Length: 245
Image 1 (cartoon, rainbow, N blue to C red):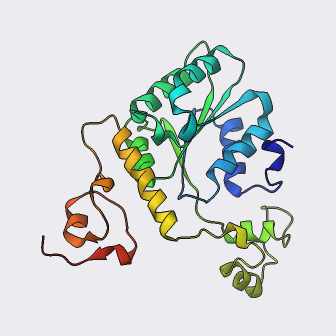
Image 2: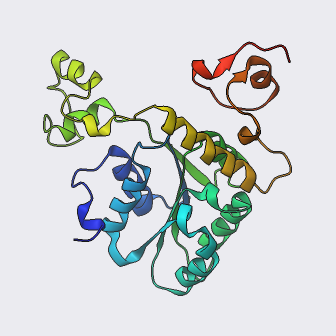
């Protein structure tokens, strides 16, 4: 059984929104999808690949960044019309590359749609207002599972068109993700270690002279002055301490 065949049959709402972007958005060719780790960005892209078959090319940049140039050349020369780029911040100078991909996607010889994901909201937001600003890209945010998605995944509604029959008991179950414990994001030490490692990789790969705080240069705990002096993100409270620096 292939990896695609093992994907869940039911899709998150973001998949429908991205499919609508691909099929009906005549203005933008690039969509950015931001979401914290383990919320389903990779699954969403793979479900899109399953939907569109040979017309979609999926690239996991966390493991194939070194081969990206050759893969992009192959995509441009081929028949596929949808490019799915997972975790773009693993590319060196990814902001410059994203702009180059955008320019290619609007070309006269071949026009195609591009969907780009990243785990750092700060990186993708920066990309959406800098290299891909001015309305050149749509920015989608993928939150943890929403109430309507919970109802759909647990079979309490048949689709996303209506949840008028939802009850207070359903919402109480949703808050505990009753029956869907596998969707719970485990915010443990391993999660934060890997999250900040990915943020640091994205900081290092940025092509701009200004850089976000280089998180790997600070060993937790982080002091409040460090947080005030640098552009950064919300840290878990147990990592913030008073210091005399």
